[in-house]
Length: 146
Image 1: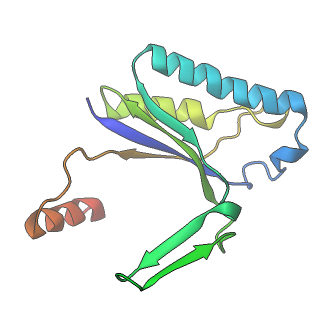
Image 2: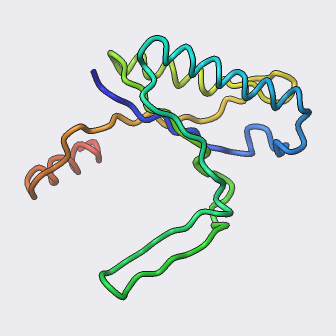
């Protein structure tokens, strides 16, 4: 069965109120929703992994051009308005099921119990990546949609 990465994009524009200004009951409801959803997916054998990520203010970007030519940049980053908050890996029978699960993740409640409508990237995990230049060219062509 195919595996999909469901990447949760944190976008304050969905509800610009920072979570530290939510009521404790709103935060608890938000976290409980994720807990119930993950429990249900695990019981169905669909949840492979899931993690919450630290914010971009403590993230690092590493760039290297070989030994002795490595730079490490600390956050916060210029594109701080959108960042990867966490992810789940699901193993499901079809893309349609992955999209159904993504919709459930997107509907996590925010303030007042209103679904956040968070954008969720759905990306198939490639089990065997390109092994040579021809396969890479084909993969790039597929990824580009041409």
